[in-house]
Image 1 (cartoon, rainbow, N blue to C red):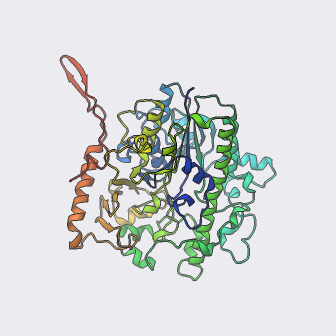
Image 2: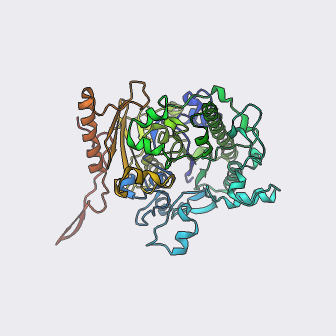
Image 3: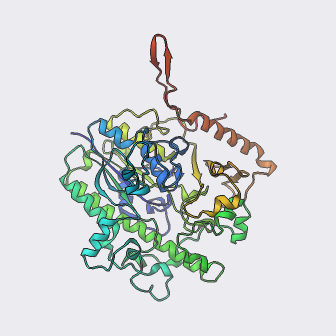
Length: 521
């Protein structure tokens, strides 16, 4: 029987938001159930942000400095293969429910195709089960209108239907629709309809918009969690102290910064700011739980149709959400909250000893594509920077896994155009590279001074020790390691070929495991 694949992403889902990983508030019973039957990777990180670049890396297996789709709207070169194209070579028809946030290559596609969906086009190789872009979910809006909701556009769909309950913050105001009529529920139903008809050998990528902002939830989810119980953001005591850590932080917290909820700015410096932050975090956790609820319906369908015995299920996110950490929102910069994401892998071929395994290693989003292709018995293309995680799910020992890296490009920042200009940088200088291990984090800015954090000191990345003499050797070691990583991970292109008078010869060289090739030990 041909194997199946279900790749699930929930947009902007923080890595700490799983009750199976000990979150003090958020409840995720269906993801927890999958974790008990599968393998969890608590040290998993996206290699870049925001959505477009992150999904490019997830679906091509490439670091951002290789695929170069650096911002939402930056075209992804068509010469790169991706997970859908590789699966098609093996007879699969990868089908998308949701979106891939792909900006098509204008040199390979007609201008009409490039501009039809903007940066929310369908990645080549995927078939459209239901293309439902996060910012233009027309099929869902049509469904709401058909049900009698007063909706003609995106903003109306996320406008509160009434005031928040007494004593609650603004984000507790309910949406105009019920939970079962939400975008998350709508996409789940359409995916289930497909899976109920699917014959063995299917490949589905289910890409949910939530818990991405706007931070508004329908009843009963809007009051699911008490804001007084949610953990406070990780930050310095004041925005001024936070901004003093580095010029980029100051600019990010300025007029050009990333404020998804612009009304939070008018609360800044007032007594209600912390209360509104806690309410917003409670709403975010409710959106996570809502995705978990409808994921349960997907699992019920797979179980009823007998698909679980031959389906690889991978559940993850494109990137995280700062959620008020360091007075920031969204997914950017160098902070863990924006890049630490969940990863659960359910492999039905694992024996009982593999169920519920927790892999205590650091892994990256570029590892997902090689993992899926490996499980399908498809050769991993040379362009992939990641490596299959299947040996780890089986408890095997492999090199690496002691560090992760990510990149963030803030040129012409579409979350606020002022950062690049305020810092006086050229576009190509607007890049941040991060190397994080379990003890330290090294942050390199192309046009600004670097940062170095001791992750053991409990300061939550608010104390920069880059110029402290006691940390000199530790910092230099990680600077060297980052340089080695960039050298070793540079796009290999045709470097394996040698042209001579006797023809063209190829040499097969496997990509070194991260943490091994870039080691200075």
